[in-house]
Length: 174
Image (cartoon, rainbow, N blue to C red; front, top):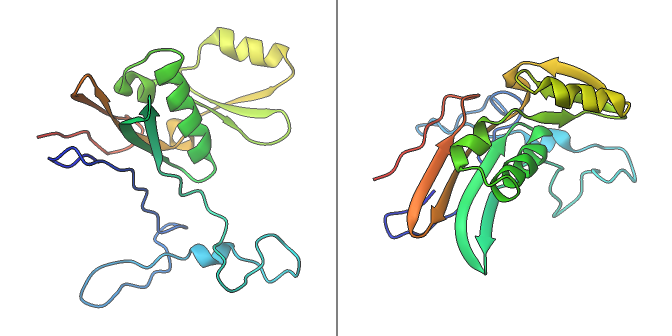
């Protein structure tokens, strides 16, 4: 988000597991999250519940800078897809010189485990063949498996925003 004064930041809100805990704060309509369900009671486990400890999560607000100057907030929702989606958006922007909307629209991949990779429908046949030749187990999947993102970049003082087609978000300015 950017304010009218050009103050900006990235914010990811997540209730976790559908609608969180299912508990609403009276008279507010605010739903409480249930991120604590990611803790375990297993002794010695890295995610063992303990005082002053946060559970494992993928709430990763993204923010880009260039020459120590802010150029824009971005974010992808989608659990384990979130860091993979962030990487793909930044590569599209920086290495392939895409604008925010094109970077968000581009077909995505999702690493699963071992050599398994999900590719979004719309990935080129050459990419699919190349991955298979390298020994990857490639599966095609619908857009719903690849996160949902938005971004705003500042380029020469002009704000450029994008909101991807995988979700019902939109980019607005005033």
